[in-house]
Amino acid sequence: MIEKIKQTFAVANMNCREASVLLANVDELELSRWHRFGLWAHLLVCGTCRQFRDQMRFLKQLVASAPTELLDLGFSRSTRLSTQCASRIKALLREEASKQ
Ligand SMILES: [Zn+2]
Image 1 (cartoon, rainbow, N blue to C red):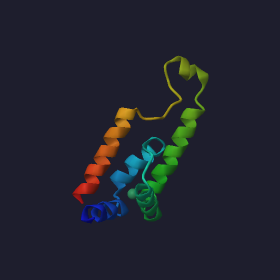
Image 2: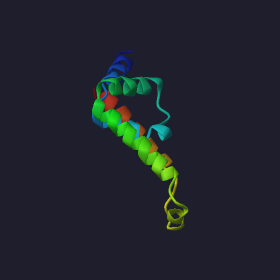
Image 3: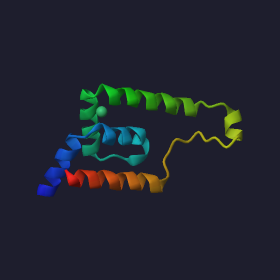
């Protein structure tokens, strides 16, 4: 029970580094309700991360509309993380939450 309270408190006090990792990979990570809440709360108070979120959205739109010539050069329209990379990020977030 204490551990759950600690994890919940840690998520609610998310820092910019944690928020930026989540924002960069929000489509792939299937965030828990608490992580979504923590990210939402962080974005309410952090203009830098809101700007980063907007930049990530812009970049994803740019990649999605990339010219076909770039695809011929091996460029991919996909901005998804590999499953292995998403798992590593989730494990790091859990580890960070358990430290606090
Ligand atoms: Zn921030």
